[in-house]
Image (tube, rainbow, N blue to C red; front, top):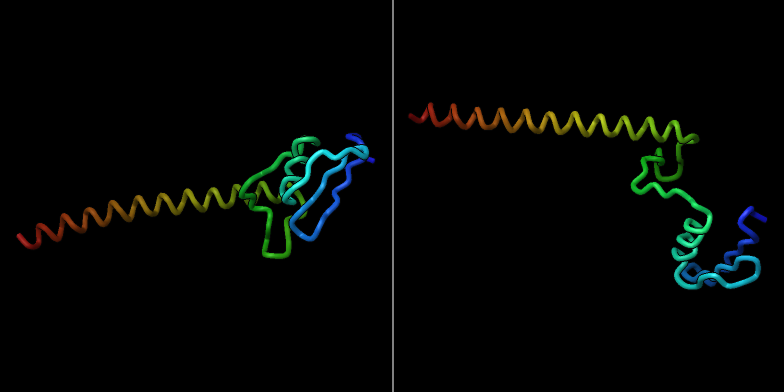
Length: 103
């Protein structure tokens, strides 16, 4: 039993779930509603678009590794943006030179 009481998810197929807390129905419907109920009831932090997956079947083992991966990806995105800005500047300069070359 959790510190929040006895929580049970009763699944019907793969799509429906009934959530019971201490024997009393709390929520029923699509399975994602059970997850939402648990997140709200237990104060679970949800991190959208997390870089926690190494590949399709393996996740980083610690939050420190996840945070390091998030920082690595943010750095790469910043580098890519800087290169796009540089490329735009170079294209602008190339167009100016083309105009001068035509006369």
